[in-house]
Image (cartoon, rainbow, N blue to C red; front, side, top):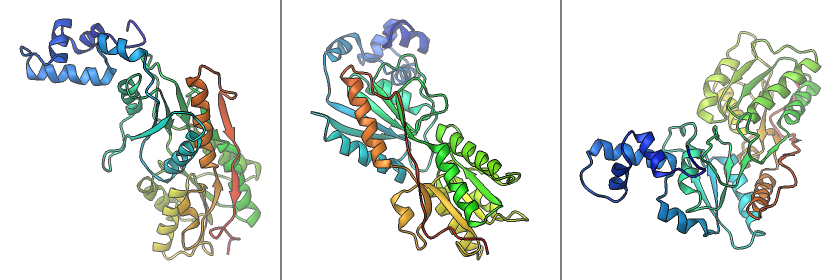
Length: 336
């Protein structure tokens, strides 16, 4: 395409119609078949096209609004959002608006953030924080962005995350110190760097202790529903693990519920450890042992980085990693 912002020619080429047809649709004029009109509207939405007059009026504007995009308003994202709101108190004349990609129970489609940002950028928001994004790699996207828990290979934009690999090692080390040798792993959303790093940390720690991972690794997607199948498979192995490290708290809480339904007592029959330290982790009947992320601080740091970008400054850290800390509670104990 010809510029950083899509032109009417770009829209016409993508839709397979003439520039005159695009103009008719944009101005609500007759003489365009309904299916063609809808196709043009879809391309306009996809590319985030703004007419030349609108673009000229918008370039000189600052909206004073920062967007926050999340796949869904689940506990992890909500805690990070609290940090963003807290950090915004120190950024003059700014408001926060949040968008979710989830509609009902269906997961958001890959790349939904890019499509939304193309529509929002320059007209509704000055910049955005994207939490646990799917792939964002659109050459037309010209907007200050900061990623939280970025997609694998997401080096293009500044990011803030926890040291996932070290956190996973802490989890395994804790279980080994208690005496566990057969430790199962329930992974997270495969497209995210955090899931890859936690998986690597688990494998490194198991190897360092001379323990096998054969048949003990399953993959979820960081959601409760996505954890049900993998957790059930681990717990029905002929030689069941004595402990399970789940790559986030939601998955860990799901493991505990399934274990209870099978008549297993946690931690007497099964130790379970999570990752994140969401509020529900400490509210369960047996408070969850977990690897804590400084979720609020992640949000504070993300908006500080975005504020630097909006002021034309380079953030002090392009890719900031914060420390993770083990929180020992009531779901881990020595094997029976």
